[in-house]
Image (cartoon, rainbow, N blue to C red; front, side):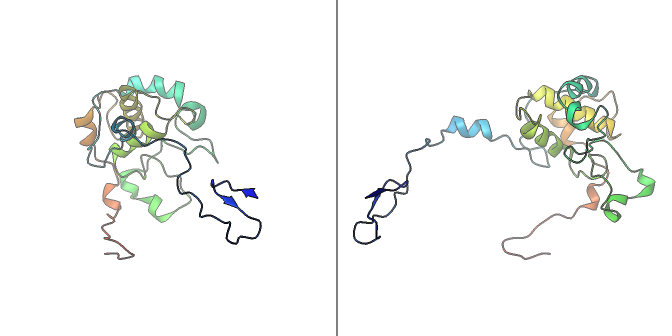
Length: 187
């Protein structure tokens, strides 16, 4: 007789001795409300979900140097092919060159539609070797540094939940909202 990894016993031929595999494997536990709350940290484009805190580009520059530069370069120039460029911006006079030439690097300054989602990404996914390890103040500061380096906010700005939600990215009007409602319907 063979013992299944699914917890049932099986006879060699799959006949009458075969049992249906168990659907519960006895691993893990149900998530508690506290477990869910620690992971429910997403931030919407309108700023919903931004936590309390604040940061400046100057504060963010030091954090960036310690936590981000080893992968993304000292000035956000990136380290291809693994680590993307973060800083770089077309002049408004040149238009949305990225939209016409897909070989150009996608940066925060030339591609990202919402400043709040920069915060969201940094908060949840960075630094690569310790995602989620930065405090809210540190994430506001790094976000402020990146937005300032991309000439989107002034170097003396302070970001918090209100000021970050008010930032308008340079090319936000070049993106089309996906308002599909099920299936492949496109409007």
